[in-house]
Length: 584
Image (tube, rainbow, N blue to C red):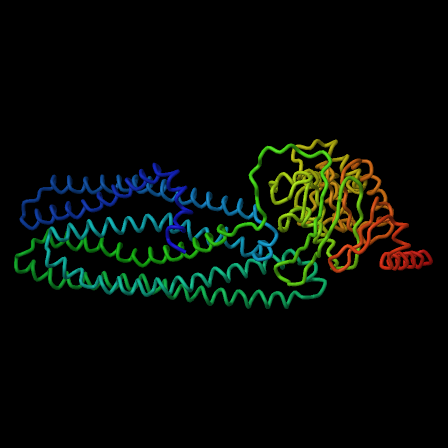
């Protein structure tokens, strides 16, 4: 991965804010120039004192100049900090927005490879390192370069041989910085990876806290978290060890130069070949040179951290969705879309065993029930129909078109999807229902809740539709969460509704109420319901039975009771269970 491809991530922000950067850099250069003038003023004052030609007025004028320069430096330093550091924050925002937008466009296999903790680390720790490199790192690099060149130039103007002696330790600094920077890159990359693991462990623990408490796993989780934390701290100390060496080495180099100046420069003053003013100015310039030498190590640290993090972000943004995203060609919405499956087969990347095998199926308007044993491919079919996973060309058609020739947004805009696990947000009930239609009216929200048979439950809550339900709907029961997710799908009023076992936690009476709502709202629309409840399936227009990724039978309830042994055994078992419950 070349440096050019990494810097391409930064180029748009640099192009957009070039004027801001230019003014900021001009202010930075002005500060450096003003600081370089002060030793010249000191030289003039010291020489006049040494020659006994100084007057109180002259010294006051020189002091006034130094105060004026100090005030200008303070103002200009504020300007460059506001403009350049502000630019680094704007750049950080632009990359964060790009990461967020990219993540939202990715397909389900992408999220199987990247944990939420890993993605959060990219948007926090990695982005912070890039921001520091493009903010203070950029400032320090330019400041160090300008100050070092200008300072060396002034030193050469004062005395060439003395300058060469002061610069003798510099190769040692350059060599040590190069060695340490290489080691820092490797160690910092390890730290970032461990931060991702630590973040993901924290997130998953908080999300699953009720399960952890139920299994009394608090001590185990604490021990695991402590172990991850210790590894993170250990590797951070390794990074700190490298960083801790850089500044002392730079300081040592500068002080060695200062020692040579005191020994050799002092002798030149005694011999009369160097004035006292030049000596003071030379020492002042050498003191100024110590900061750039120290900055070399600090900048190398920031740049290595920034490049490491930028490389991680680049790898993330370079990953492409396996779902072809066709540009919108202005297709008109379909009023009665249907699905056509032509020898459709599908396998997950994590397993070689096909989840679906040679499916031939038509799914048009009406209510279709899908059932079968666990792992038979029911949920896989639903995810593929919702375009969450890729399929080969010519195997899945939507409205007569191959899905790989249609924009993803076009297909998904026709489909309302209710998954096995309802995804709810820590917002009000009304906000959760209106997620797919942010502008929905109160009447529309209530109507969707009634069709999902959850309206009465909502009215029983303290704040009704304004009730905050907590993270993932923690304040609601399993059945309430499922019906709330269904209401969210119903309010979208799309021509296709897919319910992937989304009513498993609902009691039979409520299930029938929900089904009646579907019948009212989805006339001449396509409804696909995955369920193993025979009573629910018996109300559908057609039942499709899956087994080991294949369709083994399809038909109506009465027909399948006669012809399919699996369906018949499911019916007998459920009737026997209900009879047993009735006796109790």
